[in-house]
Length: 334
Ligand SMILES: [Fe+2]
Ligand SMILES: [Fe+2]
Image (tube, rainbow, N blue to C red; front, side, top):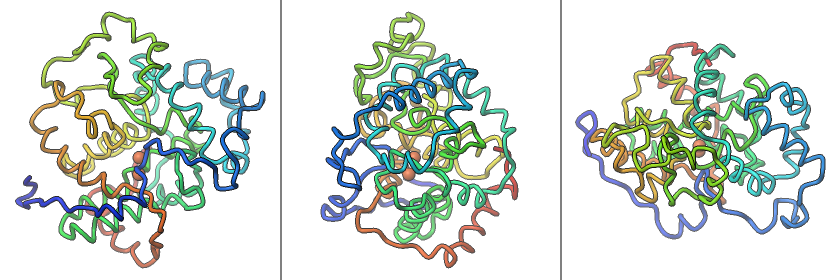
């Protein structure tokens, strides 16, 4: 495809390299966590069940029940529990709750961008305080993942500086986990995303849990097109709430000059039903189809490597600061 006059040739990742990699937001479940515990040994305690309920209550619209107690959760305790908790509880809760109503409320609330003012780089540093329980590399600071993604792209596509920066910022929406952003629960921040306002495609992972979602039986939303029309463009489609849509809102509202392919990658990188399974094409327009080619390229780099490439943050920082300056204002509203 062609962007800014550049012909893009898709680079391939060797089978050997791919074996050691896991996709961000995917559902690769290790048999044991990093402490050698099996998932059976991590079945929920009554306290965990209470916390999950309060998390749910907060996002489902009963904030008085939840938030104060949620922020009292000890981050270290969550880190010790590792990836297991979010894997067994997150996906069904997301499917049951993340519908038209919730998305509208979250977009309205977080679209105010009245929580913090900070630069892109400051947000990268803030994200280091956030534990992403869906991240298989829990010991690794988030900034390492961001820079590994960006640097790997830079190596193979040296002229696409916008794609390097997209790699750096694509997960910044995970600051929604941070107390300054209400410390949203795992299921409302990470995991696969999907359109709301039309029928949930069967290719969306854990589709069976949608039966508990009120939109599933609502005749306005449960048809192929729902509230949308053929080829309306994904820009006009509401996506389930998560770090992708939030970062897209932040970038757009702060008037980034990234090309539309960059914004497309940010908003849809967890939309696996579309970019892996090829679903929802009937809602896409020509620009979406063009941008999809870039997203497929990007996704090969949005990886967690088991054989970690350590990045010297201070060494690469000046390059990324220059890109931030090129594509973003000095301070952004979040
Ligand atoms: Fe990522
Ligand atoms: Fe992500």
